[in-house]
Amino acid sequence: MTKKSIIFIVNPISGITGPKRKENAINNWVDKSKFDYRIEYTQYAGHATEISAEEVRNGTDIIVAVGGDGSVNEISKELINSNSVLGIVPAGSGNGLAHHLRIPINLRRAIEVINKGNTLKMDTGKVNDKVFVSLAGIGFDGLVAAKYANSKIRGFLSYLKIATEEYTKYRPKKYIIEINGRTIKQRALFIIFANSNQFGYNVPIAPEARVDDGLLDVVISQKPLIMEMPFLAGLMYWRKIDKSKYVEIIRTSEVTVKSIKKRWVNIDGEAIKMNKKIEIKVVPHSLNIIVP
Image (tube, rainbow, N blue to C red; front, top):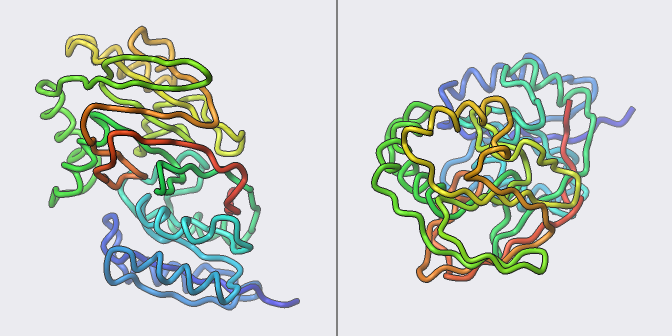
């Protein structure tokens, strides 16, 4: 049997697991009867994209992101509409796409998923010219992503601390949303464009979102009163956030959002300042990915 070629692209600083432990897990648990494998470490932002582009050109069968949502995004953008298959060994903070796909967080079990090689052809999304695979968002979500990017402390508690501090002083922004033939003019806390169902950390924001339905779930949220947040958190926990009077979820293949100023946009956890007009669309069945 001809072995498949596979490269593990490791972000050495993502998550709390050190690079040596990640490397040992790969060496111990990858199925050497099936794969000729290599391990390469990223050295700077964007390096994973450069490595992936070269691997796609070389015809590498499987390219594995060993990191968080940012690493998954960097690698995925080069694999879209290619023959190479994405694998994920979750090793970041939020691990949103991995949680959605039920890829285990445990290193050994995640590598065993790679060994089995079950694949899905999933959708991706674009915000103007920027690719996202899990989730994008504008408004409060984008602001928190920008603040979190500059935080020296990673993890859910750091993210929650920033969100809590910013929430009380954040004023919802005016947006014009063009979607499914409708024009919605509204002040919103945030607008999420969900391919998967969650922010990460197993926190669902679009409970019914699927990565292979050819649609995005657009979540438009007003700002609840601070005293109502525990109730809203409960709805989110029980995957019923769509039942809140503050939230509207609309499924679509494309949407345009306009604001009076340039806003921060969260692209799979990375904050990017974008134009006053953004166009969001789904790219159906454009990425081959290994799933349990």
